[in-house]
Amino acid sequence: MKILIKEFKKYEKNTLRAFCDLELLDLCLVIKGCGVHQKEGRAWISFPGQKYKTQDGETAWADILTFSDDNKREEFRKSAVSAVKRFVENENQKKQYSDKPKEDPSDVPF
Image (cartoon, rainbow, N blue to C red; front, side, top):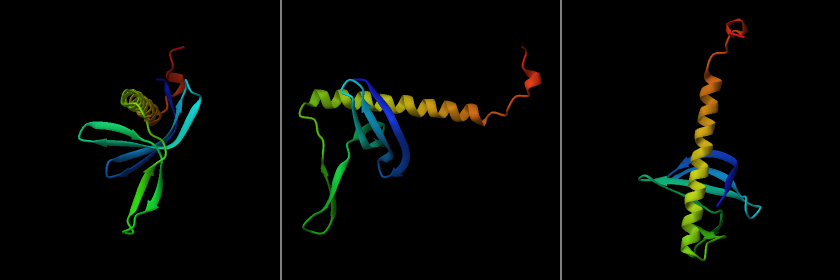
């Protein structure tokens, strides 16, 4: 499954680490507002949900999207987590590069 990270915003609360928009390239489908979660070395992606109040007045979330096949769910999880890891590594490399002092053009050997 080919997945592209379209947007990524860090947000840390409990297991939540970020929100992102994912594009499933083979389906030409963008899923906005997915949660990126991590706990005890395990990572997963949650689909956006719909907020509602329970009879007790508590806030709860209802799934909007779900997989009907466990194998497809796991395939998606692995692909999405891998895409997020690649995205974060790429962003960290960009940051490391931009944090380096600018070279003096006279120092360039050509």
